[in-house]
Length: 228
Ligand code: C5P
Image 1 (tube, helix red, strand yellow):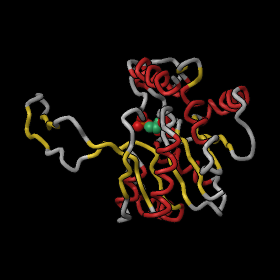
Image 2: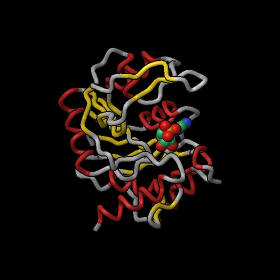
Image 3: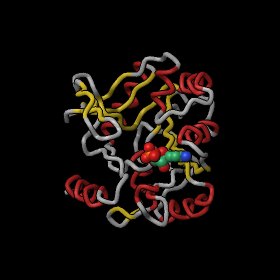
Image 4: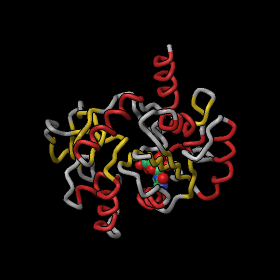
């Protein structure tokens, strides 16, 4: 397989105030993470999918995948680490050496379309590294600790990062090496830090990251519209 997907889903999801990680919460009757995995597992351009989960969820996740008919050599589940980047690294370690391109996609973004996956993979093939993002549409303010505005930030040329984001495997490995212990919130930051150009790919407003409880009904209504 030349294009692999890594799905980091090893976060605790504490902002959701649930007793289990948010990626296991049901969305339209199926766990969020299953929706996300399906998008990559069934995508013709993706040869291998690696799902990274909390160590204590390994067995349960494997059972859940089997229940949903997701199985075979092209799907692997591994345990994640402390930080998101540690989880992604755990996924990278199990990839075959003939992997050319890696797409990393948040476990908590179940609404990604097949088209966005295709365009992300193409952009990485063409440019070496890419990230899905949408142009910022709101006016942005910087505030101080007392909530007083200190600046209005020009939103021209500003983008909100989503996933998939990815790179050629060799570039991603060298970015991880260069980064050392630096803390990042996404893989594009690692690449940028290593001086590797990363291209923006037009993402989708519907590709939301389920973070707060109120995101669930919104995600369900987007799903209904897609299947209608
Ligand atoms: O915290 P945030 O929502 O930005 O996390 C993005 C993704 O990274 C989530 O899918 C989360 O499960 C994953 N993650 C991880 N390992 C961690 C922390 C977050 O796989 N240690």
